[in-house]
Image (cartoon, rainbow, N blue to C red; front, side, top):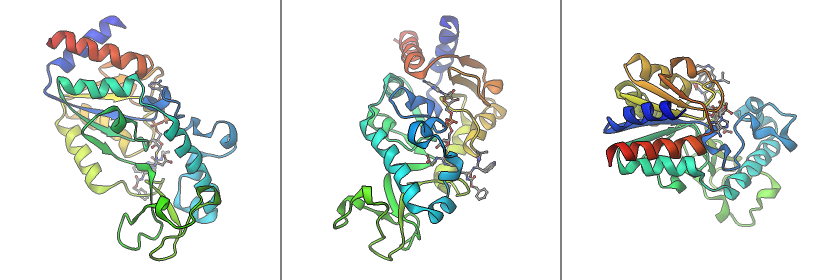
Amino acid sequence: MLDQIHSAASLLARQREIVVLTGAGVSKESGVPTFRDALDGLWARYDPEQLATAAAFERDPRLVWDWYEYRRGLVRQAQPNPGHVALAELERWLRVVIVTQNVDDLHQRAGSTDIIPLHGAIMRSKCFAACLGEPTLIDVAGLAGFDPAQGPPRCPHCGAWVRPDVVWFGEMLPRDALARATRLAQSAKVMLVVGTSGVVQPAASLPFLAARCGAAVIEVNPSRSEITPTAAIWLAGPSGEVLPRLVQAVGEQLA
Ligand code: BV8
């Protein structure tokens, strides 16, 4: 692995800017289960792709709201791990744009300054009917008598349900975010892909687009993923251990 880390570091050290695509794996060591693990324990009997949809919410708003409240609790307890911190520290040497599939706020809390959230933010809520435009954000904490344990509140403007401000399956990604991420993938010389199974589209197509446009893809993942075949370098380990070593090696080459 040492040789691969040095090869990856020398690729990164030659860039002025890099694009990083992160998935749930980068938050795993912070105690936030990966998307497919998010159903451990209480949620073991549900399929996430059946819960993270508008239809599931319309069918059973309380069930879906409770699942997000459970996950919000995990995110609140979580701290950025050494992998998040390393990506923030990398900004000492390079311009780093983080395109994230994650809906937690751990990259922000670690200090990264240029983050493109493709799938929204779990800590934010919005009107299900987007009554004042998409998104109609609702500060649920400010709603009189609101108790998150009592299921979703009603929108104070129109009375529709309030939902998490995340992109559900079958919903469009935020247009500007996806457009910027796509442009960055087309122009990148190096794309670092961390902790994603590469299953969920259209985010998972970004590394393939980058590689087609001439970028070297460096993957950090303890297991093989859909991305691995297109990776020039696969650093097979947990991001909380690999990223600090990678960033240290970049620093040594640029110091
Ligand atoms: C859409 C928010 C247009 C909600 C999420 C082709 C084109 C367009 C759409 C599709 C398409 N094919 C299929 C679709 C439909 C669908 C889709 O992709 N389905 C999949 C299942 C096949 N896509 C959509 O619906 C998207 N919408 O395209 O709109 C449209 C509109 C109408 C009709 C048609 C099309 C919307 C997708 C967004 C869904 N929302 N999140 C919420 O979080 O509740 S996705 C959700 O799952 C996460 O945000 C995340 O993005 C994804 C999970 O992926 P990963 O992050 O990779 O996590 P995963 O658990 O899979 O893997 C973790 C990895 O970490 C593993 O590889 C593991 O080895 C690794 N790991 C573990 N430990 C560590 C580690 N790595 C590093 N360190 C460690 N310690």
